[in-house]
Amino acid sequence: MRRIIDFLIKNIHSLTFTFLLSFSLIQIIDKNFYHNSKFNFYSNIVINTINDFKQNFSEYFELKIINENLIIENTLLKNNSINTAENDSIISDENYTYIPAKIISNSIKFSKNFITINKGINQKINVEDGVISKIGVIGIINNNSDKFSTVISILNTDLKINAKVKNTNHFGSLSWDANNFQIMNLDDVPKSALIKNGDTIQTGGMSSIFPENIPIGTIIEYSLPDASNYYKIKVKLFEDIGSVNNVYVVKNNFKQEIKDLEKSNEKY
Figure 1 (cartoon, one colour):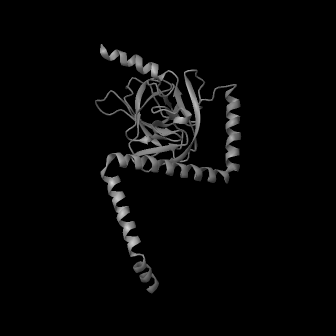
Figure 2: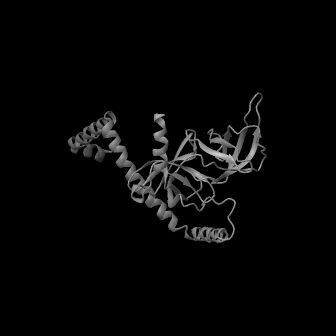
Figure 3: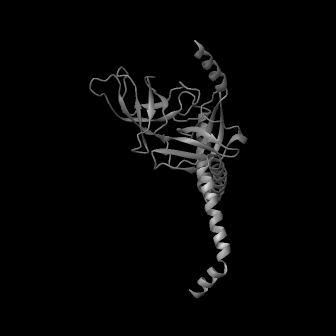
């Protein structure tokens, strides 16, 4: 105890200076929007770099599992060359380009969840590019830096995705209510649609983000509220968002052309 007191007395000036300097920097960052945004930007880069290193380090010890998964995936790809797999999200379409990426940060426990991937501007990843896995929709790019991008997860209450019932082609809006990380809600499907439990739900293709017919999940429950013309549908996701590691960024090669065309209609 005596040594600690002697150390504090001996270094009182240095410790005081360090404390005041730290306090000043915290106040500058906290009270100024510009400094705060810059600090968050560069700290996120450092954190993402560390997460990427941790991900690569852990994967080194999981090579056996990864190799087994690659064998399974290669088998599926070979099968797809003969017959298109019903639940395969990688659909051949010249309008879209697929860029592989790895998830380095993920969350499913909040109402507004985000994912970080190890690809960014350097790999031509743009905001509003879609993100999918081998068997389902994951989310949409909302921010990026040179080497990383963040994704609004499908498990985010702010995200709505155009989806359809495969057997009927009736469209609706898919969203999450923050209750069960495996269950989504599909609204606005009219009562004229002949639906049943087990029907497949796919992307509807009514936006420039996802191609049509990307698998999402299956209907596990539905009801028609009194005096309503639209079903309330529960959809179980094909993909376990909490365990996915490898994803694909989906780039619409004609997105900007579509946006420019739609924007030109605003003057009418």
